Length: 133
Length: 133
DNA sequence: CAGTATCCCAATGGATACTG
DNA sequence: CAGTATCCATTGGGATACTG
Image (cartoon, rainbow over all chains, first blue to last red; front, side, top):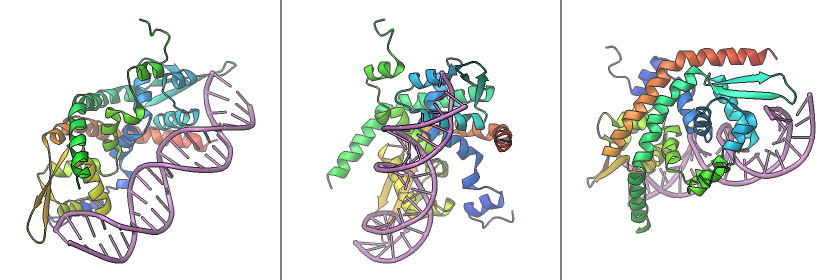
């Protein structure tokens, strides 16, 4: 109980908690990224090749497709498999971890879809109120 | 079955789906924002005043605290209540919708905490592999 | 096919100073 | 106390062109 007077910031620092290197944040960042969730959902249908993914996603550039896939691969959500054919062929698929992420992610997305009418109502009310000033 | 040949992009457009105005994305954006989740968790402890929130959060600026709270208020997650005292006093609290978001959000955060060791292992392996090239 | 390499712009968010 | 107002650095991400 020696930290009774510490602020939350100090507590966190004492625990080695660092916002800029927070594991939870690194996952939330995936969710916040523009294409990650779309790619994850697409990969749920099974392994997909690079260009197939690109075609399935609305308006994603090769640049962002590569980058997002690399980020997911680095964190162990996606597996990249190169086949030594020519022309080259590369397949992307969900790892077990990536697959297990889908459960909480679907929870969040489901909530978002369910609440969407309420959100839009709230937003409209807020904006109209703001416009009146 | 007339859309058998349509790409996913075309399907989505046909359904009026627009990435830049997608309700699901607008929720995911909250999750991806730097301070939202921290604020939401803090508000779970009950209503909090502006400066109290600021003190509870590690290194958030007034600017970002205001902005994040406004974003949440606009979407109906947070309620802002002004007391006409002087000096002025303002209390922020979770709405029912905001409270109901905590369930799927806790699911995601819990998953992130549980997977964090695996993520760090994957990341280290990936980085070492990359360094070897 | 499956990427890289560049360039560039818009948005995010931090620092600081000021206010009713 | 609870904010605004400004300015500025970093980042995210789109467009385009090129490559093994």
